[in-house]
Image (cartoon, rainbow, N blue to C red):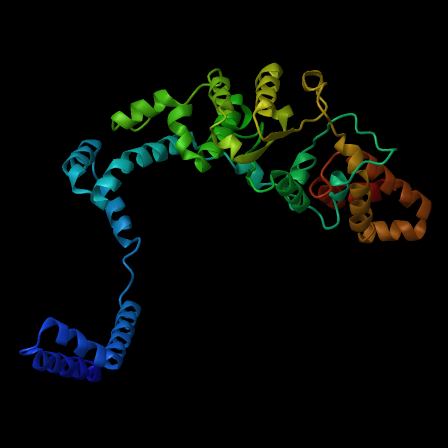
Amino acid sequence: MSDFLDEYQTLQIRSKRVQVGLTTAKKARWVARDKARLEEFVQKLVSLVAKLNDLLPSSEGVLEGMTHENFTSLGALHVGTICEASEHMNSRMYTFAKSFPNERCQERIVDLMWFRTMDERKELINAPENGTYGQILEPPSRDDNWDGLSQWPCQGQEAIYVHRRTHDLLQEWAGNLILHAPNFFFWHLGTDEQMSQGGLCTALLYQILQVNRPLIKRILPDMWRHLYRSEAAAYPIPSPAQMPKVFDLFCDPADAFQSSKYCFYVDGLVEYSGRYQAAVQFIELLSKLPNVKTLASTRPEPGFADGFCGCPMLKLKVLTRTDIKNYVEHKIEDHPHMARLLAQGPAEARGIITKLVDKASGVSSGCSCTSIRAQRVRCVWSDV
């Protein structure tokens, strides 16, 4: 640094000494003759600036964060005053003050859509047993009977949802578009939101708007208008009766359903507490949206069987029978009691395993069969 300053001072003195009594043309010729020294000086100056940039932290993003923090603590009236005062200044403050009310209103509406137990049931899904569930995603053979849809706890669609190949296939379908997978898992042991159509609609809408916040103003105009103009802490979210109208607005060609693709998962319909027909109609509405696939699942239930009779269906308890058989054979045969039974009477022991597979058909091989291994084998041993 000291060498640079000395050379800069020397060059400055020389330039002043040479400039005395010189015309503009002679000054220009002098600069041309001293071009090498000038280029060397410029290179050192560039190097100095680069080193200073390395030493000093970048202010990019820092000012925005500080401004956002300050604006968050202000009321709507103060933000509006700042916006008016800085309107003709062409400053970053005006740009931020103008967009901040919109962003804050979007954030408040999304927060109102969220409820604590939204993902609780999904978080309880067991990881698939190694080597299982692959058959669900394979093309059917001539002998496969794909004529019904069956879903049991921790089985069926949940297996499809967590399977890695599911996401790979959906990404192929989405192509260059962004893929989203909103989901909802009904649960009759949970809260009212976890077993109602209101919870289903709210959870799916929350997941859509969370990644497409500019849509909020058009999809929920009344809610937007109220929260934008006031400091109210809350506003009623759309009721289940209003939700179909809200989702109808997504059919606009200009909305995010044209730039993204969605796969909706609705699991455990048998645990739904409302009218079957209302749930069927809402799922059919989702299926009619552009760039959308919908996968719903339930145990055999006449109401849903009639409602979805015209839709493609999978009988998952048939497709997963091989997985259940492999799991039972792998887990149960290793049990000391079963090993003793196999040694004493192989045919009878194999019969017990077959019965376990039959009884577990359609039940999670990752959940229920664990219970079978821990409890039923002891019962079978005592019976024998």
